[in-house]
Length: 192
Image (cartoon, rainbow, N blue to C red; front, side):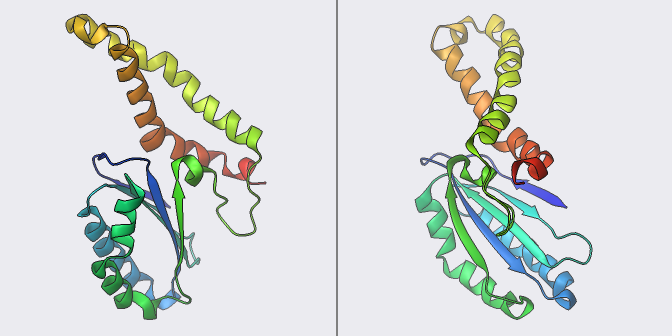
């Protein structure tokens, strides 16, 4: 089951995702879930934090995938190297079957990273097709949604400013709402 915890985006450069894999001992799952709530709350207090996505294991599974998003590489590294994170990890270490695996991904790399080590990296044409399928309808719908605002505030409807508002809205929808869900829906096809 996937869960998304989001926060308001903050400035600071290209977005970065810290992807973490934990294999939890079966008898420690409840304790791990409580710990997960604590570490999510702690991460959200750091500058540049943009949200956490959790992919929980299916019934009987033990592998958790956690993606913590930050606005910049420097902000992600501050959290990753923090004493607070190190102490929280020490609290749960005995509940893990192996050391955590951590990857740092920037931009859209996270969407197209194979879910397991045995999955194939998706071919470029599949990445292009999925990205186009997500962005194309948004480029038609978002300007229509902005139209009432532009009619009330004509200054916003000036050339350049209008395009910037529409582009920013499309990108926000793709990054925070649409693309993570679409990739999950087509994951079997993407990573075959």
